[in-house]
Length: 525
Image (cartoon, rainbow, N blue to C red; front, side, top):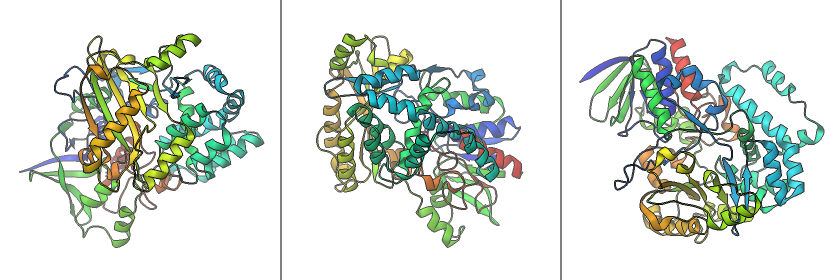
């Protein structure tokens, strides 16, 4: 059977849905095809525990840090399709083994008070470097909504000229661009609180050992800018559902449970896709791959389509290149979760409710030790640093009254020496034991879903379990993302476009890769 549309979008993650929305709103006939039985990809909130149908769990993204700082949601008009967001006043923090806590507030003045509790010098340092962090995240916002090819040297010089930093700030900027994050944090901060928080935060953005990974520290500024960090009311699937509604209202369609077997190419032009069930979907104008570029330009193309050099480029695209990935545990609870030891200490300070903050643990030394073990193919065997959130505390719609959902993860080896089939059960116990040092409520557990890196790669089709598809390194940004010569959304195959996290401006809940790719596709037609 053969059907025909103007455009076919591969993948119904948020970037694919943004691309399809852009195309449909421009009057094009667009079809989105998705391998999974649901839309959203890694931006979903679903009842994954059969015994807990009222508990919505997030395996992938839980927050909007990047789209929130741009006009994209307004540009697409998704509020008209039901999208609502929650602004988080205290989104992230660090928790010590003894229960001491440092909170990143949206208000920078309150954040400085938190840091000062642990170190006056660290508070002064954070205040001094904040303009650098704010400049970099502002640069990302400004450049992220533009095509790399549109950024002239004159424009870049104009943007940099706005910086107006003093000598010390300029020196710190150079360090961010040249040092590894672990080295930068060690040199910059004194307290375990700031050192541990920065180490965990930044290790989630990319390989922490690379020179230039210090730039990941800029993410802190997103907490303090504008509305700060947002969370979709009703869970992250609310973003996908609003986009899907927009697509359908403009005449587009989405087909789930429809994996793509191959992109069809005739005379070096993408003319459609063949689905795994044999159906051919023809595309009059173009095909947009919102999946990883390693798939769009690799596994989904006939081997004869690309030249040898391009195939090598695709093979060498770095994805969790330091072999550090995530182990995820999402839990449905029949009761309330909390942080009893930490809350007792906090009540003596100011009584802030710690349930609504996402917590990171571990000292800098803990993270360096864990990183060293992982890069040798081994997982930490006791008390790994953990990342934990009670998502239903800030959005009660995610669980029944009086009950909670937990979002937890820890760093681990993407490909441990013994393999995940052998290590998954044991590492789950290690991680759960580490969580229970801080977090109460597991005695009311209804059920859980666990994803090792091998599971994440298999279920979501992400190379080496890399959420960003391609590592967010200094050499893989802008026109070099995902590789030199492949960074303009167009590909060596006419009518085939890259529209996922592997292209500019990159990963996270973003949407601009899909938006910009769709604009290119429309212009080409």
